[in-house]
Image 1 (cartoon, one colour):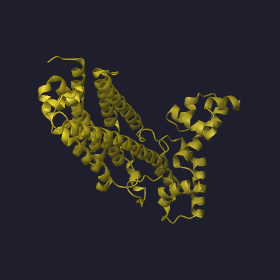
Image 2 (tube, rainbow, N blue to C red):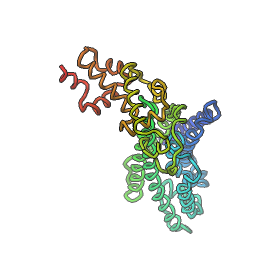
Image 3 (cartoon, rainbow, N blue to C red):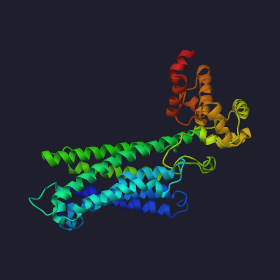
Image 4 (tube, rainbow, N blue to C red):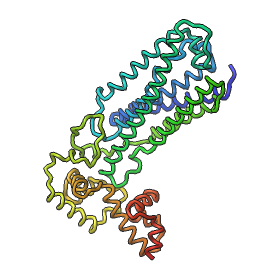
Length: 397
């Protein structure tokens, strides 16, 4: 067996995947495992399918004869590429609607149809499957070859469609989660799952390039990436997933799970945090909302709680002497804003005064008014004032 660069890469990737799976399982049986069981299981499923794919590639390179016996079977778990990211976000966030089996009916149905489409392929002789899937070689004649190719084509097309649909659904869930976090927190860094945006984009781009390269190799006998680069990309995705997934804490504060009312919307339909239906039975009228907002403005002006970079809806509600859900309703329905935007407006107004009156640099002023990152401060300042802090300071003087 020759230790080619591609084989070394996939073996290292498979080893890293196995180690990552062991770390995830250790988290599952640890003290916090029960609270984060859903996200950890989804992460484990995604790591598993990457690891199995790399093990399959390593076996194909190291021992083609042994790989012939299992060639194609790794495709049975490929639907997890599409399903696992959606499951991760669904189980990790506060998006209305519990994760129930009925939420999985359509994905599981397509999974079953995909496995049925692969049956003709898996009935082929192992050597034929190996040559077809690994080298893209079509035998001169083989029983059942045409149904196998047709089934494989249907599977790949359906899998790509499922991947695209899952990506859209996951992005919608992430957007709904971020709206909810902005209704509860004044600092959303670390809880918005931003790393998943990059992961999904990189995953879709990598699969699109890999598919195009495979088609080019099949019909034009050319390859743009090369086997070494393709393996390196897959290993890079696996390592990034493991690093970010294992570092991610609970994206939802424990106290926040008690604030949201039971949703009346279907489990598969994300609902914005400012939806009036969420407050339909709260009993809080317009006058009550106005009094709460007056009390809130007085507390913000007198006590300056906005200077706390980790200010939460619950903390501010306690200082105002109202229930967090009532404060959120008053802000959303009477104030027309989210908790996040309301607090940041106070911070930006204070920053404007400091920029005009003091010689402190922009970063120092950002920290003084409650921002813990210059990028967040710049984005909020530009959104509220329409210009950068430096430009505002020049004009103010």
